[in-house]
Length: 204
Length: 204
DNA sequence: GAATTAATCAATCACTTGATTGATGAACTT
DNA sequence: AAGTTCATCAATCAAGTGATTGATTAATTC
Image (cartoon, rainbow over all chains, first blue to last red; front, side, top):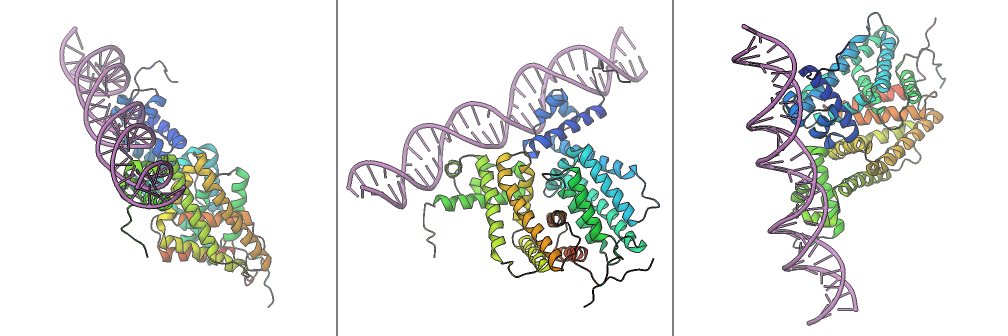
C-alpha cells in the first residue's frame, strides 16, 4: 500500500520517475528533442528539483542507459536456460525479444537511440557496449551448444550467427513490425540455422 | 578543370557542400549536436548564406536524407543484376554493402541516424521508408529467384529472409566491424540460406 | 551600360536551454 | 525543542540557437 499523500519522494523513487519520463520523451522527440524542462514537467517537479536528483543532462542520459541495462539483465535472469538444448535456448531468446517488443516497445526504441549515442559518447558506450557484448556472448554460446548437441547446423560460426540474430531482432524495431511478422521472420531464421538432416540429396 | 578563383558558387554546388558538411557533423555530434552555425563554418560561409540556400534546419535534414537516398540509388544502378542467379545476386548485394562500409562508412552512420529520425518525423520518413521498402523488395525478389533457380533453399520465405539480410547489414555498422568480420558474417549467412543438397540424411 | 538577379555577410532578434542561487518547509536526529 | 539534512521551487543567469534584416558586391540580362 502506498501513501499517495506523501509530499516528499525519496531520491531513488524520484530518479526512477525521472528516468521513466525521460525514456518516454526520447521516444517522442528523440535525443535531439530531449529537454530537461520537459522531463521535469512530466514528472511534476521543478527544474531545480530535477537537478537536485540528477546533476546534469549527461548524467540523466547515463541514468536512462543504466535503467535499460538493468531491465535487460532482469529479463535475462527471469528464465533459466539450464537443461535446454541449443534450439530451445534460441527459442527462449526469441520469445524474450517478442515479449519486449510487445510489453515495452519503448525500451527497444530508446536502446536503439542510445546505441547510436554510444558511438560518440564514451560514458554511454561504457554502459551499452558491455551489455551488447554480453548478449552476443550468450548467443554465441547457444549456437555453439546447438552445433554440439545436433539441434543446429554443425558447420555454424557461433559469432557470425549471433551477429545475424542480433541484427534480426534489432531490425524488428522498425516500421511495420507486428507479432505475426516477427514470428514469420524467426521461423525463417530457424529454418536457416537448425540442423536439417531430412534434406534429400540430389543426384548430379 | 575548375576555376577556384570563383567567388560565388551556384546553389546546386552550395547545397551539395552544405549536405556534405552536415553529414560529417552528424557523424561527429549526432543529430542532437547538429548546429546550423557549425555547418556554415565548415562550408566557409555565413549563417545567413546557409539560410539563403536551405530555408530551415528541417529542410537541411531533409536535404541530407535525400542525398543519402540518391547515393543509394546510384549504387544500386551501378551494377547490373541481369543474367545472375539468386546466390550471385545476393553476393553482389553483399559486395555493395562491403564497399559502402569501406568507402563511405559515414553514409551508413548517417543513415542509421535518419532511420531513427524517420520514426517521429514524417518528412524524413517520406524519404527514408520508401528507400528501405525498395531495398527490401529487391532483396525479396532475389531470394525468390534463388529459391526458384535452386541456388538458395527451396523453403525460403523471401520477405523474412530480406528482413534478416537487412538486419545483418545494419548490424555491421556497429562497433568492431572490420572487413574480415563482415566477410565471416556473410559466409555464415550464405551457409544458412544457400541450397545444401549435399546433406546426408540421418537414419532414425 | 543600366537594370535586375544571385550570392554573400555583419549585426541582431526573440527565444531556448542547461544550470545555479537563495530561500522555504518537511522530516529526521539527539 | 533545537539543530540538521532532505526535498522542493521561484527567479534568474549565461550561453547558445534558429532565423531575419538590411546592405553590399558579383554576375546576368537587355
